[in-house]
Length: 479
Image 1 (cartoon, rainbow, N blue to C red):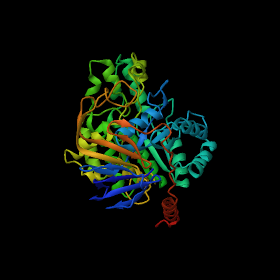
Image 2 (image 1 turned 60 degrees about the horizontal axis):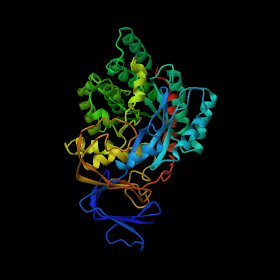
Image 3 (image 1 turned 180 degrees about the vertical axis):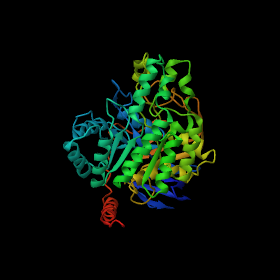
Image 4 (image 1 turned 120 degrees about the vertical axis):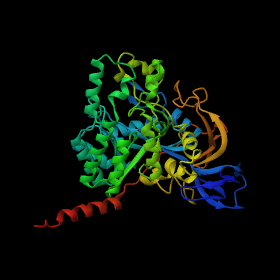
């Protein structure tokens, strides 16, 4: 089946222009006017609408086993929600248990993901270290299309990566041509503050942001950047939420280091007042890490996006329902950390970014799709509208108005952190692998329609870094 989108305005990260798009065999076959098409081609009228690369969410946790429970949105439900919001690809996280084989965990996530409606790929977390981990990292990069590894600097006594693990893993990433990524929070400080608050009898959701103040993120961001810079490795910081972390990234970039920053749609629009809600369930529903911050940090995040200090937007979609959140009724440290957002990301960013003048439509495309594709080495296969690129597209109606609500969401959970927010601009059609996957409120994709995509390593780029490091080491010391 082939598909023709006609009458719309194409918007890429660079330019906007009017043209039709002909999709065949999962690829963009032609772009232009009066295109030659097959007789059985499905035609979609996009008059008055925009055609953009499908969203790529670089940070999701579908079906994640975490804190004694499992996220409610499995790969089927989570990717259906993604398509409803205009996102055609996710990069999820394989998180091995300490001492578990990376390859064993990877295969488990691959099995779960076979039910996906949208396309998917994986980062793999480094939660422990020995020679077997080092060897399996090579197997994952060389034979399974994994080019990024995640390091949690938080969650002491669980999956926290200590400094020695960061050094070993970052060095291995440099050898393999893979991107090290970090969740930057000082886990020792968080643990200490949690115990201190509990001893004071502060046990509710209001304690969560107190146990993870901006300074613990700033410290970890600076530390991880320093380690990466010392080794000569690039670095990608996930869910940046504070001015301190933005400043650390900007300083490193100004010093000539390769550091990328990601922020969440939620952190751009929701502040820490949610933890003061008198309704325990509503307050607990917002518990995620890093937590929502005072409004002053939102301004720093927007400026980071506008200046290019921050490059991508994500959701950290990890959905838990009220019953699961209630596991921490008497101890806030037991509330499963996570919120949803994969369905709402694009609409929220359009409303608060493009409609307010903070972003142009082209910049919107960059931070929701193209930059992720470039950073994780899948551009122009994805994140582009070009002949030969994957036919992953979203038809966007900038005039369509809707109110975000738990009553209309695709997610399996019973809460929406954007509840009641009216957005002007939303996806009317989502094309995934050249097929109409979502159209005017109806899901057409089936479980299993989503395809796994591999991400090549950055071999050439890393070779140049290693040569530069070797050259610097060989320079004689001035006396």
